[in-house]
Length: 639
Image (cartoon, rainbow, N blue to C red; front, side, top):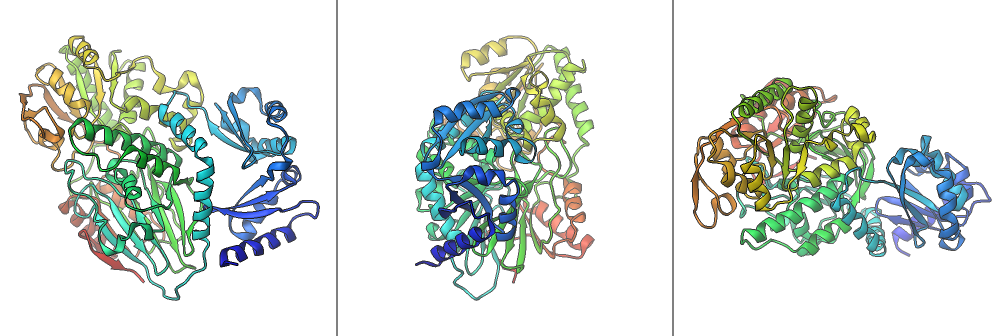
C-alpha cells in the first residue's frame, strides 16, 4: 500500500470516528486539493449542518461530501423536488445531473438564493434528493467563452476527475527530503515589462508562477530551458496571477512540451485565459506568423485548471499552501501568497496590483499573517511615476470627448479588452447619464464585448456597489443602450468612420495589431478626431512610439511588420493618466508601507530598468529593508 493510500485509510477511520453511527463512509479520495468523502447516507450528512465544517477544521482539509451513485434518486423525480426547494426568484436556467459524481449543477441568475443563508438551501436540496448541488451563475450578458468553457468541462468530466485524483495524490504524497531551503529563479519580467515567469523551489517542490509573452517583442519568451525549469514535467504546479497575455500567453505552450500538471488560478482568470490565448493564436495566424502552439493546448490548460477563490488556503504540494487575495488589477487578478513548510517561510507574488479602489474593483489586499519576501511589480515604480487622481483623469477624458464632439470628430481609445475597457465604459455610462457628455454611440471593437460579458458573469469579483448594480438587470451599467458591439467587419467600420461623432474603444491597447490598426487607417488622417491613450504603452510598441511623437505610422503587420505601408497621422494624440490597472509610485509605496508585518526582502520586477531600480532604492531608504532589482536568470536563496 502506498503512503497516500495508507493516509486515506487513516483519514477514513478518523472521519468514521467523528460522525454519528448511522452515517456510513464508503470511500475517501483526494481530488486535487480536496478530500472527497463518499457516503450512502447523503441526506443524513446534510441534516448535520455543521458536520462538514467541523471535519474540515479538525482534519485541516477542504472536504466535499458526495453520495454513492447507487443511492441517488432518479434525475426525473429529483428535478421536480430541487425546483420546489429553490425560490422561484432565483431564476434557475438549467439543471444538469451527473450520476458519476452524484452532483447536480444548478445554473441560476441569482446563485445566492440557491445557496441560502450559510448554505441552508444547498443542505435542504441534499436532504430532499441526496444529490450534491453545485451552483454557477447564468451570465447576464451571453458569453460564448463562459458557455464554451462550461460545456467543455462537462464533456471532459471523467478525464478531469482522473487528473484531479492524480494531482491529489501528488499534493498529499509523503515528503522525501529533510533539507529546508526556499529559492526563486527569475525566468523573465526583470528590468522589463512582459514575459512574466518565475520558479519557486523547495527541496520537495517546483512551482511556476506565470508564463507570459513580451508585448512588441515576439521572440523574447521566458527562459524555460534553464535547469530550474526542465524538464517541464518535473514542475509540480503552475500558478497564474491573472490572464493578461504578458502573464498567461505561453501557459498552454507548457502542455505542448510535456507539462501535465495543474494550473491554479481564479475562475474568471481561467475563462479570460481561454479567451485571450485563443485570440493570441488567431492574431498570429492573421499576421502570417506561426502560432507557438495549437488551440488544443488551450483546451488542455483549461482542463487542468483548478479554480480557487480569494481567501481559501489550499494545499498545492506536500510543503506548500497557496492563498489568493484580490489584486485590484483586472477581473480575477490575484496576489499569490505561498506558505512553505511548517512555518518555514512565506513568499508573496504581487502579480500586477492596483492599491486604491477603482470603479471596477476594490483595492489590492496586503493583509497576510506573514510574508518574509515580496516579489513586487514596479511598472510605475519610477521616481516621477505619479498618476493623475482618478477624478481628475475622468474629468480630463470628459473634456477631451466634449471638445472632439464639438468639432464633429471621433474619439478613438486603444484599450485592453480586459480591465481598462470596462473601466472606461463605466465612466462613459455615468457621464452620459448625468449629461456631462452628449449621448452618442460607443462602439466596442475586438474582444471588449465578450470580456465585458465575462465580467458580468463574476460580479462577486467586482467592487461592492458595482456588483449590486449588476444583480439588478435594469441597473446593469454594461447594458446601457449607447454601447454597440462591432462584429469586426470592415464595412461596419467604414460606416462608423463615415458617420457622425462617436467614441470607439478598440483592442489592442498598445497598438501592436488587431482592430486598432484598421481604425487608424479609417480615421487616422481626420484632423477633427483624437487618439486617446488611457493605458500603459510598453517600450518597443507602436503605442509608445506614437506617444513619443511618431506621426508616420506603419499600418500593416504586427508592430509594423509585413509590408511597410505607412500613413500620415493627422489626428491629435492625448494621454490621459489615471486609468491604468497598475498602482503608481505612491500606491506601490503605500502597499508596502501598510503591510503588517512588513517583508524582510522585496524583489522589484515587472518594470523598465529605471523603474525597478528607483523603487528598489526608495523601499530600501524608507523602510530599511533588503531590496533587489534582479536581472533575468538570477536565483535567490531565502532560507
